[in-house]
Amino acid sequence: MLQTNDVDWFAEHRSTLSKAIDACNHRYAWTAYAESPSSKIHGKEPPIQGKANFERMLNRDFPLTMPGEVGRIGEEVSPYTREPLGISYPRVDVETLYQAMAAGKEQWAETSVNTRFGVCLEILHRCSQQLFENAHATMHTSGQSFIMAFAGSGANALDRGLEALAYAYKAVQDIPPTASWQRRFGSGPEIQLEKEYKLMPVGVAAVICCATFPLWNGYPALMASLATGNPVVMKAHPNATLPVAMLVRTCREVLAEAGFDPNLVTLAADTRSEPVAKTLLEHQDTAIVDFTGSPAFGSWIERHCSQLQVYTETAGCNSVVIESTDNLSAMATAIAQSLCQASAQMCTSVQNIHIPAAGIMAQGRQISFDEVAGAIVEAVNQLLEKPEQAAFLCGALVNDDIPDTISRLRSEGNKAGRILRDSAPYAHPQFSHARTATPLILEVSQQQKSLYSQELFGPISFIIKGQDSDDCLMAASSDAADYGAITSHVYSTDEAFILRAQQSFNRSGASLACNLINMPINFAAAYSDFHVTGLNPAGNACLTDLAFVCRRFRVVQNKVMKA
Image (cartoon, rainbow, N blue to C red; front, side, top):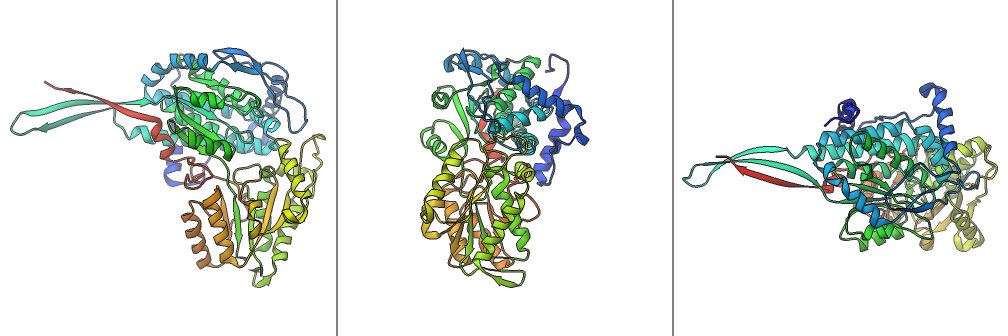
């Protein structure tokens, strides 16, 4: 089937899909999208136009209509200006919305695999042409710095979406459309059957996005379900609806141009006081839920939605174990960058840093616990020495809950640990009213586990004193098993210790990175890094593997005997 504009999108984007599949197969570094907003790459006009496009969306109805619309809602407030964005979105009656989504599902399910994947590839392509307005939209809803919003929530998130498409294509290609089958039964004549295999979607997919990185999981969840034939309803976080609404608008435009019902992708906007997520999950037509967000609601979904296919990414107590190092300065800077990047509002941010009480060997000499902790504190101070660098790294805080938590910990004195580095707002060079905070670093013992055994969202970290390096390793890896971990790190020059660490963390269902320096240690590379293992409480799904896509469709068959 060709699109109504006579363009074969699958043929147009096939080389991109093929490259993504090859990158997944061989796990090398590759990106399909420009990660830098530099005008040397894009020219001078796109950055200007992108900002203007964002500003034109402010203080008006977002240009999107939904079936079952019963009003308009919107309560986004910029973490940078502290002013409402003034954008309203359709509030919908869920039952009417689902009835409309059902109208086009049969046509979508019956169309060819290549046509569906062509539509999905075109959606990603058009989103890649909107990276500048998406960066401003993400910045002023989620609090990310502009560069993080452009790369992490733009190009890198798109790569995750393309990665999900690659795995979905690998899965559907494993099923041949037809087969001829012959066999004799006893002394009778040879039986010949012609068999047809049809890929059938399972139902509506509800994608529940988070506030801080709304499209990091939004793109792959959407692509995995839509490409395999399922209608998708996107449920944005009330704090960060705009990036999701922009994606939904693009999806609907592409679907309509291709001759399909645009209601195959819809938006369910809500407010904090009147959430709609549970209504979506309880609807009889919902078959799939992708959730990114708090451990509390994620755990509720895992426990109470057994009738659904559930894919979750929540949070964990990401840790570093320091046994030894041959480059103290570089190690401290790498850890410090994780504490600062996006104000530690990333699922990969480090929170718990385990150091032996007697200190470590560093560059051939024994240095004390206090020296190691001091090196990390000093590295944070150096990274944030200039307001421009602080703005580049930290961005702004997504809500007031984070400074409230920081204030509570600071007011508790030694009960919350010894303050090694106090937190304070930094002066953003562009936005004087930005909600900001630099990292709070607390020294605690393992006996204060109740403080650090849950994710404290935002720039809060703990330096934890253990008896020795093996004690630190046991504490960190057991916490990963009990409370979850998305990223774990070890610094050591001892190959035997590194091997023990890998075994210990892997047995806890956690992946491990060893001795990372001179790179952002928070970075999770699409096509190469399996993001979340599904083996500990930080989430039950992985971005991206075959398990993420292959249950979103089922196979039915027809067989006919040949005369």
